[in-house]
Length: 273
Length: 307
Image (cartoon, rainbow over all chains, first blue to last red):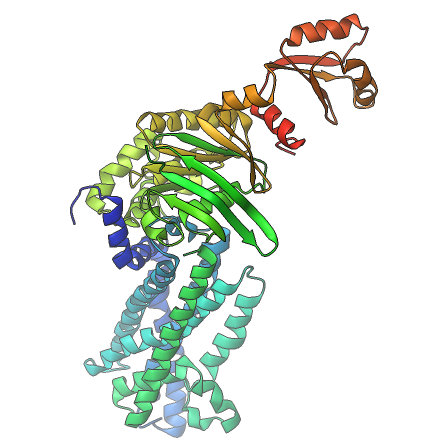
């Protein structure tokens, strides 16, 4: 890039190609205000999860019932914890900041008054959160390595898998939040009665097949289960048939792409094209 | 010279509610153009139509030779926008707000760093460069928002109620900065419901009410056409105002009875006041002043501009 000013036509041309990234960049820059808290949370969360579930509960499970899915409990639960941790964290990032953008500080109206389009604002917000989650997933993975919960190598694929699961949950949430004129109790409801059940009933702590059939559907529709199964495949080669791998990827991609598509159209409607 | 903004029969309706009702106007390059009207008159809607963030339902509109309804981002690349409500990013520092906003126009950081300093100088906020936005006063935030609107060197600056909520000193500081922009040839489009602001800032304006244009011209032309040179304001007490009206009718060519005062439109306010005293009437207070755009608005609509 040059340091020269641009003509309006040049500005519009650049914004047409990179507008989504310009907004993502602004969001990431703003996140620096919370860098300390985010770093602390990114490190402490996996430590606490792995200590409590992997080491604490794992000792009991291994002693009582032996390996789960052919591996020690810590190795079984850790990949799913990475996925579940990202999916449960995505709610607050895709609801309240969206309300902030449209209503509280009306931050979205700033880029919408420039050469950037509303749909690029939607994509930029999504991309910024996913970049943050890439860092969070890497941190979680490093803590897993430190705990001996996973062996280095192909297992690192659980990082993109975790981010994909977060995207699958986050994009529809972002679109849903954008449809709201008022936060009311909707976001709390979603966190408690959609995200939390996904965390508890998606085969994170035990195989989905161990649950009664009438509860297993929660896993089938949950990004946590689809992500966890892929993460376990990457971590220790869990037995997942090829067709099911394709289903897991398709569901996660479908939710992510569909959610972003929905969000783009809602942002267009609210901010004007 | 080609107008930089031209609307013909411009209309925006929301169902049965017509917010902008077939207005015609043109803004020349380098002009300071005002939209004066009360809240809900259609001023902000017109601004959004110009910026292409709202689709019109009728008429034609050209901004910098482009149709904002079809080419919103290209049109907005020509514009600086100062919204009615500040929407600065409080998570970013003062200078960062300018830099990140400049990025939305594809400008490089190496260009934007010195540009931000230059703009902060211009709005007298250089010493606040690294301050948190939340620590700024209302007037400072407004100035920063104006600086942000200038980051892409726009040929047209849209200002929606730029001084609402500011104290008199902050308003004058801001007007001074806007004068300077006008001096360097920036086209200003200002919405306001403050008459003094319109008189100070605008070369030409349209008076807009309920989505239609009531009158247009320079502030001086509008006053000359729709009002008298002077206005005599009389207060007899709210209980007596109505009862003395009959005694005043032939003192001035026109009078308006408001809830709290009577306005006599006259070419010589002192002479009219002397006549009133000669008739044995004793107002509680009296004031002779020059006619303003508020009087024009009152004449055109029968209503006060700020209710």
